[in-house]
Image 1 (cartoon, rainbow, N blue to C red):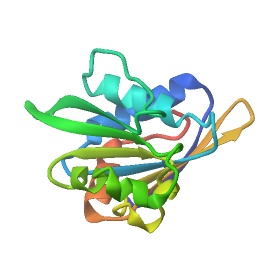
Image 2 (image 1 turned 180 degrees about the horizontal axis):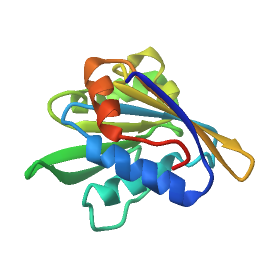
Image 3 (image 1 turned 135 degrees about the vertical axis):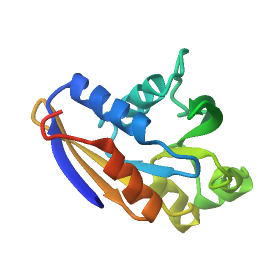
Image 4 (image 1 turned 120 degrees about the horizontal axis):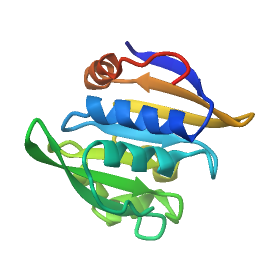
Length: 161
């Protein structure tokens, strides 16, 4: 599967999507989250991290730009890097901060506001688009690599989460 769309009618739907994504994670995966302020990008990431077994608080990296977490996949520790590039002043800051080194190399990267890095951000395996719609959110997932497509296949998503 390379594409999936649905409507998340409430926060429980967003949590269910986060849990489904957590079950499909793979080392080396890069997920880019798109949406306006308040669209649910950080909420989705929190749901994903908690479903992946992170027991503690999940902070928004709005000011730090990145927060690292260690989760377990198949019994092995994997580092998940949660980026929020909203406050980045220029795309060059992405390179200057050394963020590129976190992509690939067996880590999982979840990036909010990827457009702030311009063309300097490595390509996404999966893009998630969240849009406020009525009382809920429209969501669209697009896979751009074989790894991304494999993960989407594992989601076993049904309409109306």
